[in-house]
Structures are given as C-alpha cells and as structure tokens.
Image: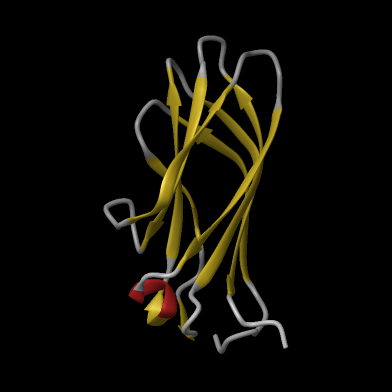
Amino acid sequence: MPAGSGPSIVQATAVAVTTSEAVVATLPAGNWNTPAGSLISVSSNYSPAASNTALVYRVRQGSLAGTLVGVARTSTVANPNSYELGFEVADTSAFGQQQAGGQYVVTAQGTGAGGTLNIITVEQETIAPIS
C-alpha cells in the first residue's frame, strides 16, 4: 500500500481469550513502502470470565512468534463488566516501512482466566506526512 493509501481492516466477533497468548486478529497480507512506517489501531469490546483480572494485548509482526511492536498493553478487568478497550501503536522499524506480503497479528491473553472478545477491529494505515 503506498503512503497515504486506504487502510487495511479486519474485524471478528465472539473470539475466545484464554490464559495463553493466542492470535485473535490477523490483518490481511499486504504490500507497503513508506519511510514513516505503519500505524496499527485496535478497538474491542471485552467481557471477562469470573476469575479474569487482566487482559494483555500485543501487536506482532507476521505471526504469534513475530517481533513485538511497541509494548504489551495490560488492562485491569473484573467480571461481570464489559470493557471498551483500544490503543494505537506505530511501527517505524524496517518491517513497518516496507513489506511485500507482510502482515500484523494481534494477540490476547487473560490473567487468572480468559473471557470473550465480543468484537475486535484492527486497522493498519501507512503513515504519511501532512502536506
């Protein structure tokens, strides 16, 4: 995707989260070339199980075993509440700047127990200077 082109988006519903880190969303493979990198946005609605105390999100390059982009994001949760959770992270590494068939995944991991992502939406945009 050239700099400033439209975003790549994936959305899923009713995704189970466990106490092991697992992929909960995979962006479609794409091509991009932008010196400023890529911006990944994550938005979700989460319902924790009875003994779930936290939810940890990670954005990784390529796969579950891929390089962590930014830092792991931990949110404190408590049943029976539902939570609107979201964040953005910029990948300015060589991977984030240029790829042919590259992709990002979002992983989730519950602490104490898992829960359910009622909906998760992930978006990738290339970063372009404002002119």
